[in-house]
Length: 96
Image (cartoon, rainbow, N blue to C red; front, side, top):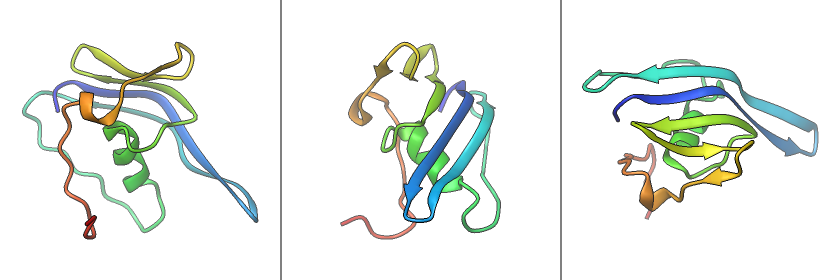
């Protein structure tokens, strides 16, 4: 990923127990050729963040920019589909 940025991104899920916020106000920038990993306890939003960047989920707000391309913006009503984001992803469990 080159210059992958997610500004003030947030994501939540509505459950029987109410609204659960999985990602709150995340600001992230990954430079070209930079090695990067997300670490944290189970349930802290690592997979949700990656899925939002890849386009498998849409955040509740914020912007996602990959390189020079805005791929998600709730305020600008912009959602670039997964297959146009040029992102590779290795799933934690088999996705077959």
